[in-house]
Image (cartoon, rainbow, N blue to C red; front, side, top):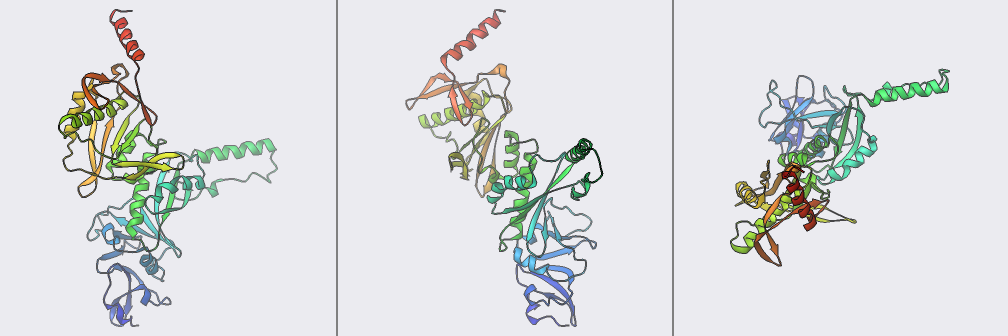
Length: 422
């Protein structure tokens, strides 16, 4: 059997199959392959790399090699009859680049599945019990998150810890001649057992066929991080920081500001001399003190812009900040000098999202109630900096409020009474 002569030169990004022909093992492009022939399971990615089968098991490819492959090319290559073929065909991702070491695999949590109709990225997460949402509701809840990565949720399945469906665990008590009350009780108990079992939530993601395979993998990684962050319910300041550190900056898009989350589109120009610089320092101190006067962990993120989504104001887009000249120590020194008492456990850091640009975050842990209120040296009144004054501010929902004179008086009276032993 002879392969077409046009396959002698492999093109970048195309997935080739191998064929035992009259002249030896040849690489065959999907468009040149004969669907009536059986092809070997070795796959090549143009001149960039390969997709290897591990011990007659799954296919594995380095992440870097998959960055060259379009989903359509991958799908076309796996449509042909090959030995050891499964359906759907799984492709696991080796995290490290370079040749695959079969004895030292470091596989990604996200893998690809290819069937006759599409290529999907599969993300799984174990839940200690059945999620409150139905499979359809769960899929719908993730739709907006994945749209930001140019992907769609194709479906969600609830599986047992060993990967099988729960369908076979249910029992139909009808037709057994049981008393209706007994039948209802037995059915309820069976359903309760299933609800309390570990559920493996499997999410399938798809995107346009002309996209690169790594687009699906990157979206799957982001979704895995998002699901992990939401294990305890909704996002918190701590889980937001974890997502940012992991580079998943798009996952904040669409969220509203709250009592523990505030975003700004620019950094504080604390290096400017004179009154403009002092104003920026006071603004930085007030923004942090607002959270310190609250009752929960909070995070201030610089590098996002808000916008309207219907009637709501949400985090609309990332507005990268130039990180040149940004020094976390400078921010911390200003806060220590401006906020009284000093806020403990502050974290100031940045995440680079493109060369020289990124976002900055300030994490403010919940402070001891007995140390509140936190005061800020200096106020800006009618455009002027009044260094001899102090201000006290609090965060409430998406906005801020000032503490009134009567509240301050109450704090002073309570403190005097405590010192006098009353």
